[in-house]
Length: 299
Image 1 (cartoon, rainbow, N blue to C red):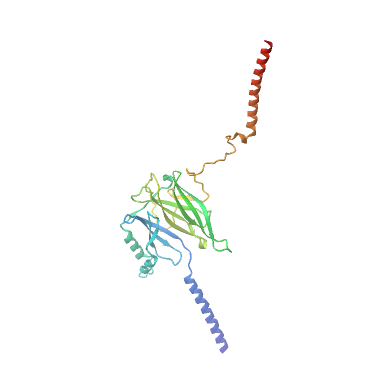
Image 2 (cartoon, rainbow, N blue to C red):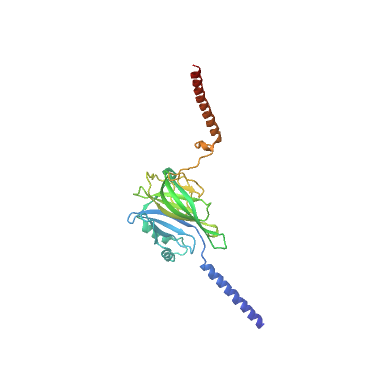
């Protein structure tokens, strides 16, 4: 009987140890999740665009307030995850009301950005695959794919960006936003599968694009960005890496399609026709010369 009790105790302790280790690893493990950007506002005091960002991955932070400089493109956090969690402890069962209230308090005097119509502004984006990062040498699991994004207005290159995704074949959705007081700069919102874990999650980010001319700031109705993924509409741009953009910077082709006749040497039939015409001309000239020679002899 005593040996059974000892055996049961050993089994119980072993099970408890394994369970505690599993629980600890589960608590510390990070998981993937979508990252959304919304509520875009302009602060003229520091010439930056402030935006709310919520990251569903990692430890599951409450909304954060970030800003991006219109002069340098640098991003900085204004109201962090740690600050938000400190506020959340007061209302643990609610959906971050105190965090949202604090973010709204910071940005209450800032100016809202309005979405513009990208196609109507003759803006095109050309994506080119640059590199692929895999998990390790023993796996073909792609954890990041980088692209260069060339931005054109009326066929003229105005800006170059680097964007990331999970697959060379995936789509990217772009939305443009006008900035109060700026006629040559916009904010570009990129939305695409960018967190490649667990099948992939949407990742959204902002970019400053300058050098535009004749910017049409007409507001797109019903286009306010919310805490949801960017939805394609008539004002957005959906881009694949395989798409081809016609632009002024493209090199002029030096090859000739097979149905164009601008290189005579490539076509034997043309050679024959020219040779025939040349033969007739030479024959005509020789005949005239012979006629004159004969006429002078018998004259």
